[in-house]
Image (cartoon, rainbow, N blue to C red; front, side, top):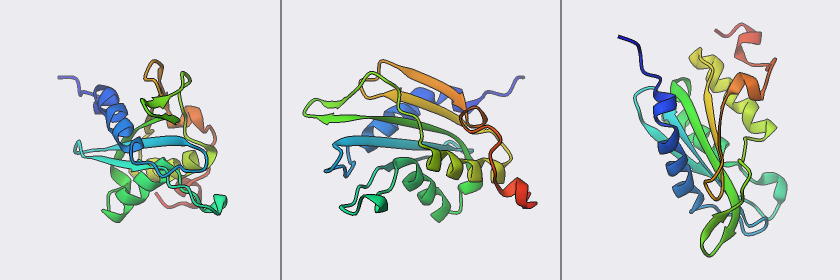
Length: 154
């Protein structure tokens, strides 16, 4: 029997969980809410949302918040996929027609989890209005990444 790729089956579920997380974004400065949801090997979903700070450089991305939560639970190696959604905050919810993709910093932090787990993480990216969804492999979003493998950690 062929093994089912949970990351594909769960893509819509991850985007829904990320949308829910985005509803809790603390984005008073940019008014741009981002939600993320990690899928772990056992089907657990860990959400994260962006956390802006008046000192802009101290702001945290939704993806890194979710990854930090996974790490706190001792589950960083178990990340299989992530869903990311974002857009302008309106009274009706998120707006925006272009998919939101992880920034460069988040891609690099995702590489840490990917290489520690020995897999290429699937990244589902959605627009705020939900009309556009993309599926990527992390290696496509950050080719030739530097990570634990380069330091002989795996």
